[in-house]
Amino acid sequence: MRSRRYTAPRPDVFGFLHNSATRIPAPRLARGLCYPCPEIRQRGENVSEPKSAEAPAIRVENLSKVYKLYAGSLPRVIEAVTLGRRQCHEKHWALRDIDFEVAPGDALGIVGSNGAGKSTLLKILTGTTAATTGSHSIHGKVSSLLELGAGFTMEFSGRDNIYMNATILGFTRRQIDAIYDQIVEFSELGPYIHHPLRTYSSGMIVRLGFSIAINVDPDVLILDEVFAVGDAHFQKKCIDRITQFREDRKTILFVSHAIAQVREICDQALWIRDGHQQMLGEPALVTQEYENYERERQSELRRQYETTMFEHLGRLPGPKLHAAKLVGPDAAPLDRVKHGDPMTLEVTYETFDPELPLHLVACILRNDHLLVSVCSTKHEGVTVPNTPGTHTARLDLPSQPLLAAAYAMSIYVFDDSGLMIHDQMLNVARFSVDPTDWDLGIVEVDHAWRFA
Image (cartoon, rainbow, N blue to C red; front, side):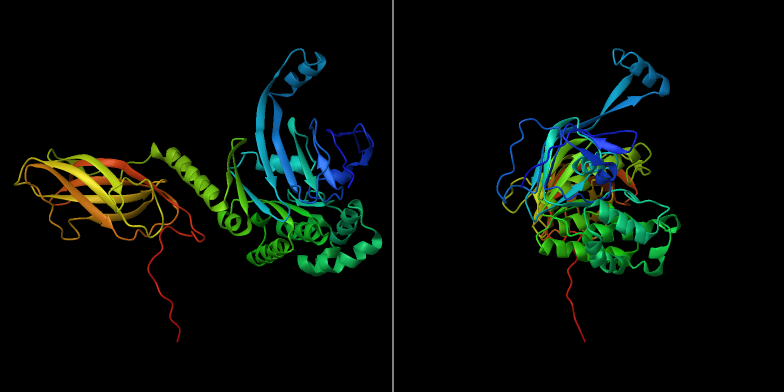
C-alpha cells in the first residue's frame, strides 16, 4: 500500500483542509467518522515506509500535545499583534511522550482519570487534532466514535446522516444501500430514523453513531466511552459486537472507566496519568494499579474530614504495641499475596501490669479506608497473655479471601471492656493481592452451586 503523510491541516474559508500535498474536504477528518486511507501519520520525521502485513496496526512514538492557555481574549490579541514576540499564554501539556504499539487483531484498553489525556490521544489518532511532537501511524481503514453527535448534522434525519457519513467515507450509493438496513436494524431506531437528529435523545444518537461505525467494516475501531450513554440492552449488543470484532481479528482501541470491560475485552491496557504514560501491560495488572491509585486519591481528599475508626474512644496508659508485620508459611515477610494464599500477622506488644486484662483487635482496610474485616480477641473469646514483658501474637489466615487491591492493617490494644484504647498502630502491615481473571467485589466467599 502507498502511504499518505499528513501534517497539521488548516481549513480555508470554503471549509476545506489543506496540507502541503493535497486538498481534502473537511468532513473527511470529522470526529466520529471513518476514513479509508491505508495509513495515517502525523508530525513525524524519518518515519519509515510501511513494512510487512505483520507491522503493528497502531504505532505511537513519543507523542506529545501542548495547548496554549490564555487568561482572556486580550492576551491572545496582544500575542497575535506582536507576532508571538510577547508570550501571553501558559503551556498545558495534555500528553507527554506517549509510546505504544498495538498488533493487528489485538485490543488496547486505555484508562485514566478525567482530564488525563485519553480523549486527546484518540483525537490525534483519528486526525481531528494534531500532535505537537512525536509520530503515529495506523494501518488499515479506521472507524471511530468519539464524542456524542460528532460528525452528525442535527437538522438532518437519521437516514440522511447515514448516507452523508457513508458518502464521506467513500461508499457509493449502491454500497450504502447494501448496509443501510443493517445499520437501522442494529440501531433499533425504527421509524425515528426518518426524524431530525435534534429530536433524538443522547442514547439514540449513540445508537446511530455506533451502528454506522461498526457496519462500515473497519480494520481498526476506536471507541471513547461509548457505553457511558445508552440502556443496558444496547450496551449488551455493543459488547457482543465488539466480541465478534475480536473473533474477526479486528484491532480495537477502547477508552472506558468500566474496569471489568477493559479486563474482559482487551489484550493490553494503558494507564495515562496527568498526560503521562503511567503503565502499559496486562489489563488485570494495569487496572489494579489504576484502581489503587484512584482509591488512594479519593482517600486523601476525605482524610482531612475523617477520623480513625475508634478515634472517639478514650485512651488509657498501659500495654504498648511495638511492631506488626505479615509473614508467609516460611516466616518470610510478605507484601504481595494471591487469593487463597496463607499468611500470618505477627504483632509484638509489651505489658506491664498482670492485673490489667487486655484485648487485641486487627482490622483489614482497603487503601481507600474501606473496612473489610475485623478480628477481635474479645469477641472471639481468646485470652491474651498479659504477664509483664514482651509478647508476640500471631493471627493466622489459612486461606486469605481478599481479591485484587491494596490493603493495610490497623492494630489496637483495648482494655477488658473494649471501650478504652491502650495503644494503636494504624495502616501498618501493608500488602497487595495480585489480580486474577475474575476480580469483582472485595472477597470471594466459600460457596457451592446446587440444583434441584
